[in-house]
Image (cartoon, rainbow, N blue to C red; front, side, top):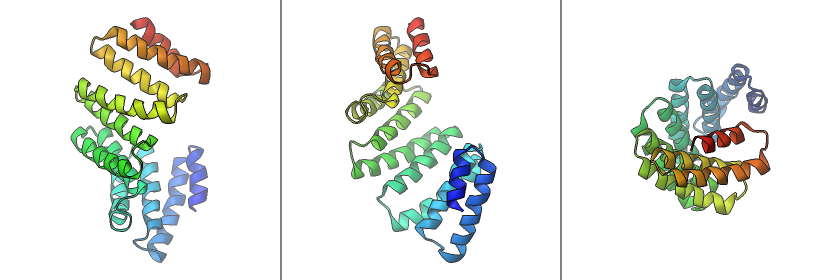
Length: 212
């Protein structure tokens, strides 16, 4: 059921995917209650609910998964992902302080597993976005720079790196540091021209440069 659901999920057929994940969940509840397989089913259902905009239901599923993971795999990438997912839901609900708390927990675990991993960079980016939403641009910039430092080493020609340059450029722009903003936009543009020459991201970079 999970395999079928994953295919349907990838195709964007979320309602049918949710149906298949629920069938898998029913089996796990009967055959393997409190197992990591059950936790995985909760996560998958939570992901679909989140993508459908059903944030309360998504949060409920993620918390059920977290409860199992805290007992069985307390220092794993899987539990870090659960904290990350819960943070995303809180962020979407506008609960920024709660989101920040979850992101920091995810970050601490991910740093233990691999301090220079791209997952750590993702956590820094999430934290930075919350600070930006709170209007704390200086702290936001610091977190984005930490993410950028990892991406420059681990994914030097990636669109993720280009996105980081663009985002840092926006922060500099909001701080009134226009020359620094332009420098970041041009770095993003250079990657996008080589790796995604017909993308909306490239068009956005040209717009940002034009505005500066």
